[in-house]
Image 1 (tube, one colour):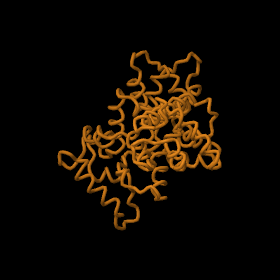
Image 2: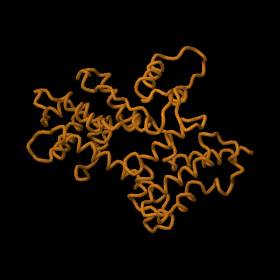
Image 3: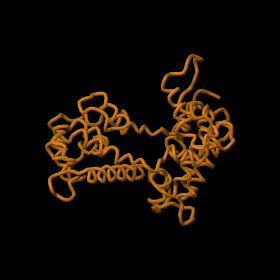
Image 4: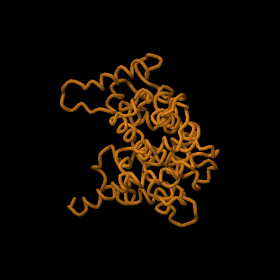
Length: 321
């Protein structure tokens, strides 16, 4: 293939991967470290919060403002979190705010890509529109993708996306309104999409195709043993986790229900954990509530938290919030 053609294929391939967000593998392991055990003045724990809950790039957003600007704008946000207007933020209010911010992020993400797929501008996205926008070049020129790696294989991605689209399409009309398309792009946020998330996780990790995830497949999903040396300590810990907590029936492998318990544990709520952590770290008088002053005093933690949507709320006009 000539260089120009190769470059075009790579660009299109990468573009399709970006648009085909549903098929991309994400971090699966929930890092459910006891957040309340970390000390308030531990800078490393602050960084853990930023990266574990936000991602490295998003956590840098609050650096756009001076500390004074951050504190001023954070104070305005505090007033919105305090839904009963009593001057104090409870864990429940903070949890509700974090969930609201996360939901807003999801819907804003969908809004950003909507026009890429609603080709006929009828305020709905049909499966054919999505397929054409994402896979059109591949479908017209399949021979150019014969050497594409398995990870980015359109041949596997397309039926997987179609299956997910049909699951999100609750009324079965082969088109998606905003809510249905949101479920398609963010299935982890919708109860009726949970089985698809479990199935896709199984398909990603189950390399031998036996319908289960054994210990080696579990480890291979997070660690590539390339140099032949000894496994790092954290890998040995994960093997113990697999044996002790992932393989619940002790048959040496995980089935779909065990995968569900792994990536979607019923007794773990990220928003609740983050809210409790923020209250614990900032509650100076230990009354189980946060005053505006307590939050402002610990502003560095909050502007790097989901409480301010990765710090993005601090750069918005107050009226937009």
